[in-house]
Amino acid sequence: MFPGNRKENRCMTERAFLTLEQRHRQKIRRIILLCVLMFLIFVFGCCLGPYAISLKHVLAALFGGGSAHERMVIYDYRLPRLCLAVLVGIGMGSSGVIMQNLLHNDLASPGTLGVADGSSLFVTLYVALIAKKIDQPVLLPVLALAGGMISSVIIYLLGTKKGKPISSTKLIMTGVAMGACYSAAGTFAMYVLDETQLEFIQRWQSGELWGTEWQYILILAVWLFVFLTVLMYQARTLNVIHLGYETASGLGVNMKASFTFFAFLAVGLSSASVAFGGNFFFLGLIGPHIARRIVGTDTRYLIPAAGIVSAVIIVSANILVENVPVFINIPTGIFVSILAVPYFLYLLVKAR
Image (cartoon, rainbow, N blue to C red; front, side, top):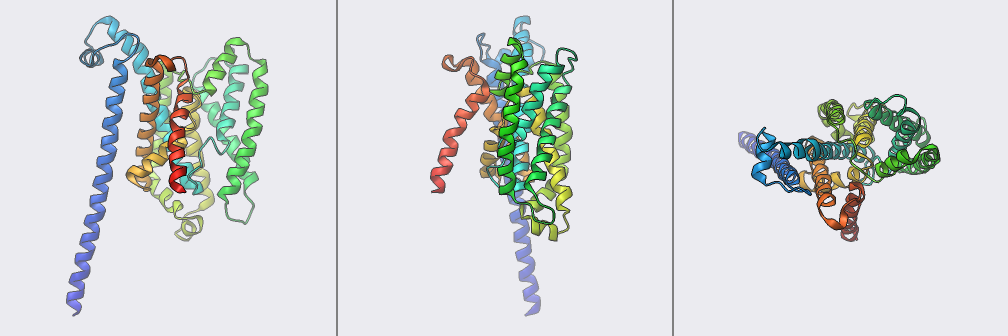
């Protein structure tokens, strides 16, 4: 009897292991398919524009062939903009995953927590007070990060009480209130801007992909690489936190230290992306939602999937605003918001 039970238990364990392995492979395949989709849309974006280039000539130009004019169009105009769009999407999608897991709220994002407005205020102050005197591109993500971090610290201090558990609802409500305050301060700061500076800030706040010079893209790429490497290394801890604050504490997670650590990563990813790409905080909300339906809730898969999904959305939106006559000159961020509205209406109807 007992040997038979041991054999049966061993078979059940093996089947469970195979099921986990199959799920792992399935999620990896889906992430690979998302990467292929992003690559195809990326190449498609290189082909389209006022000066159309065939796929054959695009591939030739990417590898050093083609005419000098084709290489100039691709390397100086289309490729930088598309690379920036991909990086911004990856940064915003990953940041959204952290926020939603940390606060156990699917509506949490840098935009809803007031972090966006803090970063926006510091970027506005940089343009108004510093840019003309010290033109250092690396200061943009640093100041955006500083604005986001100061904003998040204030929100955390106002939204929590010593000795009481963290309330995600209270944090979000505090974030909304403080976000309105930062937004008002940013609007007030705009009154000291000249016409050129004001136009830049307005388009930046609308989601204009402005940092399309290779120096900006390199800074953003290195920044995101460092933050994402640390995030993926700690993805298992984020999974434990997603089970609940009390459960995570019972499993040995230092919640205050972990909350601060992951909040710093989320703000760092979103602030740098927004500093060079413009206001795309809606991506941090919609990207994780779609990715969760594709790969599930395990952050080891959800983080890369959300980043890729967000990149696909922003690159697709950029292609449309660059090539469809009706949408030309509309900032990409506005079009991303337009695309996101039907999806959230669908979620609302389904929830009913």
